[in-house]
Length: 90
Image (cartoon, rainbow, N blue to C red; front, side, top):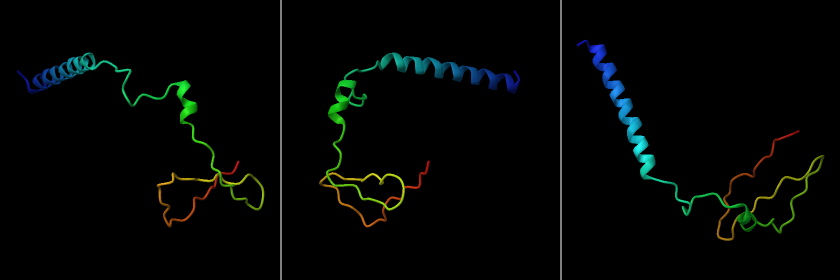
């Protein structure tokens, strides 16, 4: 037998085994509706929406609206990094 024929047969056998193996994996692992990483249902979105910050947003001189204020949870410590720069102009 020629070498190219053996390589082609091996590649076809490997592809068939991968196809059958992945099909077996899918059949053995059905979707679990109670899984914890599912996206929230529409009725739960309102419960997960964060409340706006109580601190007033800083005002800028010039045109446009002031940039949004970023707030953190009570246990999160702020770092000494420079502030976020908003460069979008429409």
